[in-house]
Each structure stands twice: as C-alpha cells, then as structure tokens.
Image (tube, rainbow, N blue to C red; front, side, top):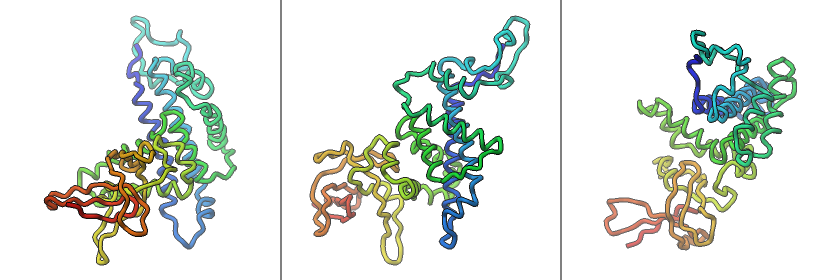
Length: 315
C-alpha cells in the first residue's frame, strides 16, 4: 500500500511559498539599498540572490503543476514502473515520499493532460521552458548570464498569473503576511508593515510600471486612481505638523464608468461605495466622495474627496 499520499493543496502551498520567497529575496536587497552605492552595482554583487530566486521560481512552478495533477490523482506523479509498486496484498507499505516524481517535460505533458487548455495562458509553455533552461545552467554551474531584478520579478508575477489567475500574486502576498505570528503578540514592526502595505505595490510600480502590473490585476489599474479611505485610516500619523497621510492611490472605480459608484482598493482588497459629486476645493477636479463614519458627529456628515482628501461637512 502507498501511504502518505499528498493532496493538491499541499503542493500548491509549497509552490506559492517558493514564489513568495523568491519575491522576498529581491525585496530584501532593494530595501537595504543606500544612496551612496548605485543600484546596478548592488545587484551585480548580489547575482546569487537573483539566481537563487530563479531556482525557487522553478521549484514553485513545479509545485503548482503537481497541485493540478493531484486533482486528478497524485499517483500520476510517481516516476516508477508499476511492476515495482508495493500495492499487492502482503507486499508491505511504502510512503509516497520514497518514490521519485516526474519532472521536466514529463511533468509538463502530464499537467496539460489534466487541465482545461483554455484556463492556462498561451505563453506558459515558453515561460516554463525559459526558466527551466536557466535553472539547469545555474544548478550545474553554468549560470554566468547576468540577471536583473526586474526580469526575475516579472517571472514571479507571470508564474502566479499564468497558473493561478489575475490577483493571485497580491492575494498570496497578503495571505502570507496576515499569517504572521506577530499579530498575536502586538508586534509593532508587523503593525507598521500592515499600515504601509501600499509600499509593496509602489515598489513594484517604480521598477516595473503600471503597464506591466496591470496584467496581473482584474481591476484596471491604469484608469484614474483614487485614495482609499481604509488604507489612509491605517497609515495616517499624528505629527507636530499635523496629521500626515500617504498620497498613494490604489483605489479604482469598478467598473470604470462615468456614473460608477463602486470602488475597489487593490491594496487592502476592500470594496466600498462612493458618490459622484464635484469636490468643492478650487483646484481639485475630483468628483468621487466617500462618507467618513464618526459617531461623535451627530447629525453632521463628513464627506471626503478621494482625489485630494478635502473634507466637507454637511448637515
């Protein structure tokens, strides 16, 4: 009997973890940059980080492929002649982990035999082959080609989107973050990161641009952007100069139409309603407002413009 047979979610979790670790590896280097040393020289020095990340991407993709195959049967992954399986009566037991599993071209062909072709991006085979070749060169000591962080970040995003669909990258980033044990212990560093999630997207926007990022979100992020009241509430700080609020705009009308009153923030994944009304601030052309909730206001209402954050009190 074959024991300890894995399920689809186990392989998917491993695949996602590998891709997220590759992403974190790159972010950690960029977050430690100093203004004195040029970024390109830092990345020439840290080529091993990019190569390790590419190997992780390959591992992550294989995990996601195996996850889909497992939905049909995990036994399809076993790379051993059936005559050598210990499955007959009195033949003893063997753990699934003792078997070699298929990889490379066999894994890809088995994957495509188990999925609906329409659900997989047309560019995925080329994407996978490019990564597989580079990974093999790296692990066999032939990876002398210089990689760039932008190139590897694109590989990570494409791997998520090609196999798990749009929004899967950012959903996975947030899901992983909110599993952090620091939330159970009032960890101030984790709480600070929580209030500044928008910095992660700003980082990707700086180095990849919205033209690249829009491929990986279901919301049209190249449309007119707005402030998110929920992200603002988390991130605003009281200073000696007054209240300091981030000006990062990652909320979008959904759908993006002139009369739309529904908005989605891709940072905090919150959907909320707005009204379409011109801002009263003289130099603002915004026409989207949100009602701030405050029980102490009584009959008064505060509507905030999501273009400039001008607050207007109404009775």
